Every structure is written in structure tokens, then in C-alpha cells.
Length: 175
Image 1 (cartoon, rainbow, N blue to C red):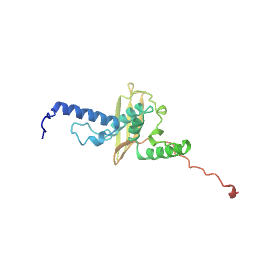
Image 2: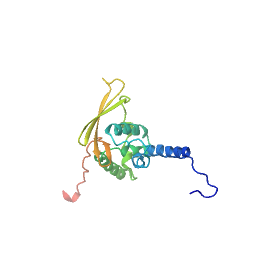
Image 3: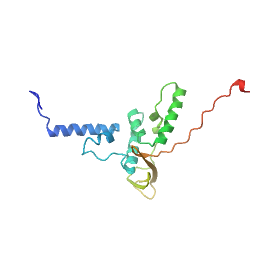
Image 4: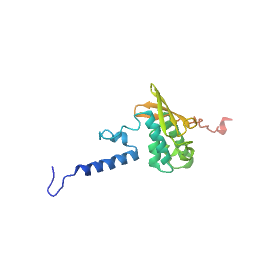
């Protein structure tokens, strides 16, 4: 119901606002949450292994010191990688004396592409998938990315080196 002096919102104005909201949601990684609001919204980026790999690559390419972009990329990782990065962040925090978040452990300088991805094809078996990524020259530009399906959707199964246990100094009285 309109109050006196108010004009009705035109459909085109509402569509423009919804479009801006959805673009913002995609940039901040809220697409899956807002996808249920709009039936016009494309499928969530983590609904298929191919799309989660494509989105992860796009998000990693935007990290470069941006904490929101780093968080968006981190959100697409499987739980084992998140645990590993959380432990690394905890250790970095102890060394630096300032809080380091797990997503800050994603080093964009360590992420580089050998080719520009053109095609993504997944082979799915149960809750695991291998996504074959090919470039312009499919015979030489190929990579495989492992994914797993978790409760929240498909995630990139980035395998990080296992952290060694923290060694404790031996007390002088133990000699």
C-alpha cells in the first residue's frame, strides 16, 4: 500500500535494483544464499564441479591483497584445505603477534596459470570429481583439478602439504 506522495516502484526500477544486488552478491560470494530469492538467478557456482573450478580460478585471479576476494576464493575450498590454512594462520599469528586469517594464507603470487582456461569437463564418481581444464591448444594445455562434494556444495580439493608437528623445547631439567 502506498502512502500519500509515494510513487509506485516501476518494474524496470525493481529489476535494475535486483540486478545490482545480484551482481554485488556474486562479487562477495553470497550467490548461493541469494539464489533462493530470485528465480532468475543462475545456478549456484558450487552446484557443479566444473563451475566451482571456473569460479575458484576467477576468484584467485582477483585476490592480490584484497581480503574480500581472498575470502571468496577460500570459501570454495574443501574442508581439509580450510583446516590446513587455519592451522597455518594460527602459527603465523603466533609468530607475527597480529591476527592472520586463514584466507590470508592464500598467496596469489603462488597461484599462476600456465594457460588461459577455455573448457571445463568433469568426471564424477560418487562425491569426488576430476575436472579436466583445457586451453586453446587442447593437446598441450591441460590440467586436472580434484573436487569433492560437501554438504555446502562442490569444493575444490586443493591438496596442501601436511604441516609438521610443532616441536617443543626440552626443559633443562629433563637432561
